[in-house]
Length: 453
Image (cartoon, rainbow, N blue to C red):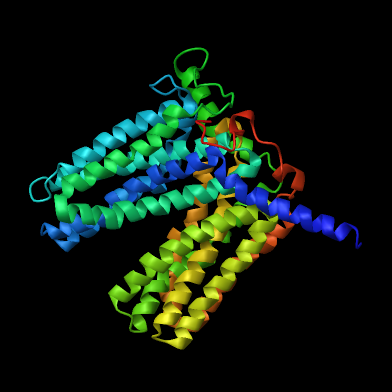
């Protein structure tokens, strides 16, 4: 035992170094850029757009109606089979071709939205905002598929962390940054700048090779109705049929649905809790923007390291438990009352542990996708994972009124534990060998510089 102990310590240090060093791989860094491009359009059709409308005297009822323009994000799985199987207009490969096509259209739509006038073209702005959201959701489909197919198994967790980090950085740029640009140079300048930033993701698709995944396009034999039926079965039925071949697949879906349920319930009612305790909106905004932003990015990156080090199954369990513990800080806040220190601690703990669990979950969803149906299956699984936030978590207000803040947040802290317990039974087996595999030849780069991969 005494002879093997130093060896185990050295191996452990190497494993941690490997997990951290994976973030420096070109493909993983490219995923950060794609995450940035993915996150830019969201606030341009949400809070930034609302600020633009409000400063131009648009009625609050109309501004509230504009929240519906984000609907395409919830239903992107409906056209994911099309992008998964139909050849793109640009002959650059299945992912690169669709990615660049969508991004060109997205840049044009953002510019058109930025040239609109809320005082005279409100219906036109609504149509363009829906178009931006649709193209943004389509971009997400391609980026998620590219990430899953391009990264090796040991890079999936850091890739998931990078995609979340890039997304959050982009939201800060298009949110706070967009408002600052609009204040000094006008709204068109703000939207034009964000459209130019989408080019960051386009550079990745232009310079990087197409993922090497052999998939047949939807070009059915025969003609007429028979060809349509065959194409439908291949593009739409195929992903479901393929997923249902997995053992215990219904329980897998239950785990995915329930894993982030407690965090979603707490997140919906966090701001009402802060307001009920007497915190002002500037205090809440400062804590969310500063402590929340940095803790989310740190949690996403840390979750990637933990998942690479310990494997998907153990990281899902550990991060799931930590996520539940993070919700207990809301109980501390409810009991402690109006204390700025508690607010900073609560926001940091909840965002840090939630982001760690988010990285583990994204890695798990990526591992469940078949190479033949990556875009469709990931879009469906991601929609299921967010369903708890949109459906079940909406009852948080009623529940908190009936049982009080302390009991409510105690409930949220245990809401995800059934999913964690299921993962102990059905979760993927962690194989250290699989987590330490050699990188692809395209990922091997000299230590002295960057490579286009």
